[in-house]
Image 1 (cartoon, rainbow, N blue to C red):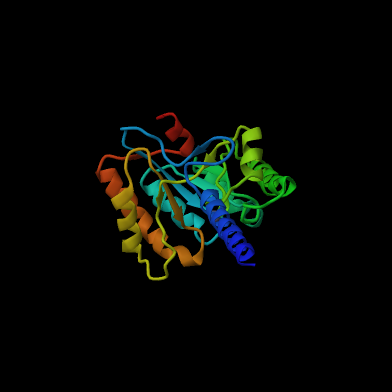
Image 2: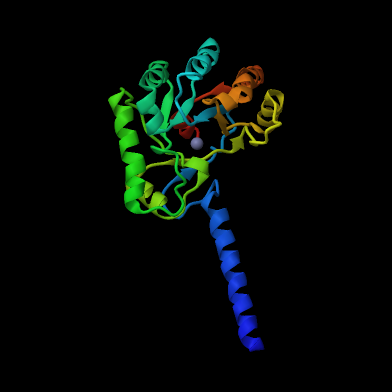
Length: 236
Ligand SMILES: [Zn+2]
């Protein structure tokens, strides 16, 4: 009886450790089971890729595009197909301004334990609608919540498609994070070859939008140039 309960306890312990390991592994920024993944580029050149997740939205897109245009900055927008369907004009404005666009799934679902057909349903219509609204550039992929485990990386590897993570996350998603906090956090971490991730598209992202010009102006003053993810890859 005692031996059984020890064995049961050990089994439970191993299962908990495994579940924890899978959970940690699924959002690793530099590793996945299949295919190519990137979180930053190792270079001494002062280049940084700004990447913006989610949306587009009609509310935030004009403000974000103006901040970038006023400073001659090009960025990469990882968008959701469902938002492109709802806000096609915002998407066209991003494309017309010359920014890079990436696939961030159709509905922003967690892509950890999903079937191969669910992966296709999230990725393929998103690619299709981006082509429909006129985007012709490369379409890298960023997983929502940074989550990927098996079927998603396998699908991306088969398509020889790059998973783009990040090396600097601007937001902590703590409610008390001010615009100054966000700018300070990015400016303390960002260096040559970094991929910076910001969330700008929703009403709750006003502090991030306010931080964006501060981040750009400070890094520009320090000699940094902003490039798309695809351009950053050429610095490898
Ligand atoms: Zn997202």
